[in-house]
Length: 257
Image (cartoon, rainbow, N blue to C red; front, top):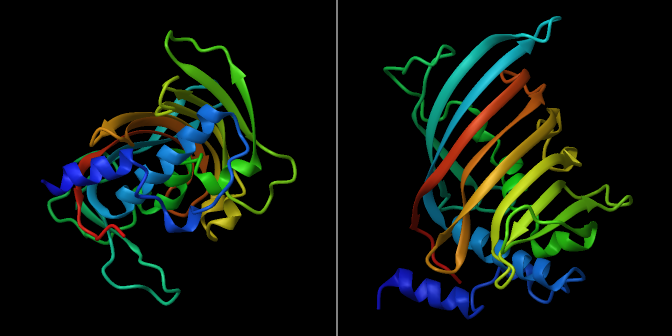
């Protein structure tokens, strides 16, 4: 039996779950709890995989007449995979290698620095938007069902509770399969407590995104397409920005325990 088939079967059966979330109680609508379990399994396998990401970033200034002045157009493709050795904290780092890049005018670079800082380097911010409903974070949210704008779906608005100030969280609407709870689309309208991620993350002052998820191995939902906008004060990425994003080509490279 092929490894990928074994993984899919085990995930459907609930055999693979993040070790850190064992025994976590889900106090949310049952369908949201299903979504949280699926996000947990999906992220767990993604964290053990090598995959590619591509992002197009447009940075601009707003002028007094509400017109825009373009400051940068940059397209970057990177390969992401887990490190093979733990860092000083005992955690396995995420390695991001730039495969192709452009200058600030969108012209392809002839030579590429694999370790160059790009917006893809801020994976912790992107992951908070892509996987906001992990089981360990459900207790920090309030959920309210809202009318679905498409037939055959269930939509829930999620917002951080007023006293949830110590955990990085998101707010927005999650669109779910009404039977399985699989995440179809998430619309993020805010990220919160980014100072709890690192010293630079909180400099992303605003962030909005629509993330579409594709089924992977018959059981997982991976964030394969996204677009959005925001305002950043991160050095080298300051100002208003909008982006389009793609992710794919997953290959399991680290042992699933």
